[in-house]
Length: 413
Image 1 (tube, rainbow, N blue to C red):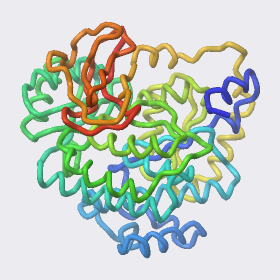
Image 2 (cartoon, rainbow, N blue to C red):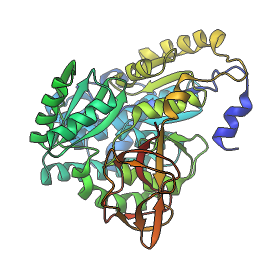
Image 3 (spheres, helix red, strand yellow):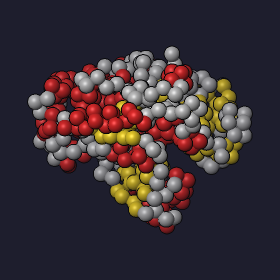
Image 4 (spheres, rainbow, N blue to C red):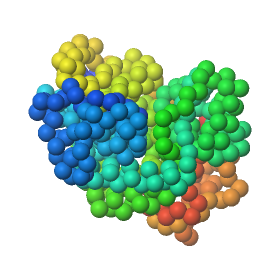
């Protein structure tokens, strides 16, 4: 049964534990010594396996590496991935399972490993390849990132355009919490524009590149080869994608989405709204940091969320789930607030495989009508089934795309 049908069929039934989602953090959540609480726990065995597969001493990184060493993209991604799966292993031993999964940036790879789309060894090799490619792309095209607090999405995008430089929105994390990325100069200019527009605060992020922007295009080419080797499989528990904020259970689709993710913005806010729309009432963040827990609370009014990062958190998780039981029912026909919010955002996808060429007259903020041509894939026209305002082109001009790959993101009103 497809996931949409399955959720409708639940009707007014109790939503716990069926209406739980597992979420997995991305790079930036790593902390020095984050493996220490897990030494001696049965789940620590994953660290040994990860070291053997990656050829890296993951245990040393989790126990001894300082903040500077962990900031290296290659270390940050591997340690966060392994830490999150170690927490997942411990939670699964309690018999707790989700209805949906999602992960923020790197965390999407963790979610795919958690659901079986990727094997543990495949996930390790793919994360190592991803981190290496992103590290090298960061050297080839130096860039940075910054968090903008207190502005809505449109105003942050306006700040990027006013900067008149290489800078883009990279993460839609939560209402009033957006990340921008690009050249050092571009991020600095956009940060000043954001402050002028009323941002409460702009914070530089300790990263080594402009992730989820066109600066990662070279990394995409390398990653495609690694994804092809991994061959993501079909899954029973769908994962909500950062690229289009839709739930996917088809392995072939994930091969395309993982590639597109590198240079596309992370639509985490929209992922949360999609899960709420599907009936999720409890969000369980598995891994270091606890950042996603705050984003869920900020985005979904009335949602319940908890972070599990250490063995001590396991007892708290059981108590938290028990506390959800009395209140986790919804009357028939109830509508989540997120449904209204997400309904204004739409994706235009490729009708076929081939080289994408954009209509040059259509740029960001261009209003387009139903059926209007926005580009071509080979000889095939790409027509939008929606009317709205173009927010961003996800596919790069001249890029080879596959059928159903996201091409552009619209706001319908």
